[in-house]
Length: 191
Image 1 (cartoon, rainbow, N blue to C red):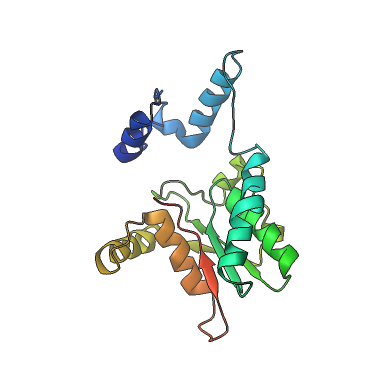
Image 2: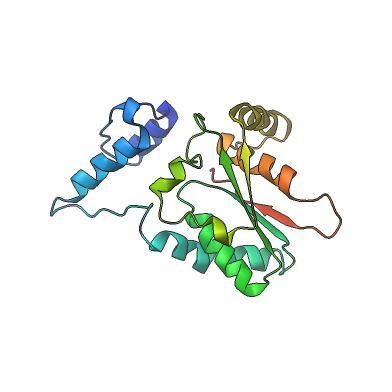
């Protein structure tokens, strides 16, 4: 959508993309509809991260084992922001196979949010991978909370994390108990 941040546009252009901006009032559904229209052409392959099983499968095969290995199997909580839901679904399934006691927790923004890359509960209907029955908890984080924590991460911790990462971290603060045996992993979908 034409409402996408200039930073995102510049990154895509730098990577060689030819941007086609869609009507901002139609939001992501309008952009997805345009991508599907273009994807019908014979010379185009539509990857569709919202419906392609390769999305959660990649996280099941790579991110899940990475989390398990790097925590030496001690992870007790896994937290991810909800966008396409490929990360939480793939990693969550892998970790639950390793230990059913691991808590898989999803964080979503409020309706009308301005946080790039994540979806409100209503917007999550755009993806085939939103499976709340597979999660042990969900929490909604407000726009301002996410942006305030984002600034703190940048200024106080020198982490160049964006508001979707801050949103996930704020969700972890609310969902993971402050106990000695808890080892939480929070995904920061940033560079």
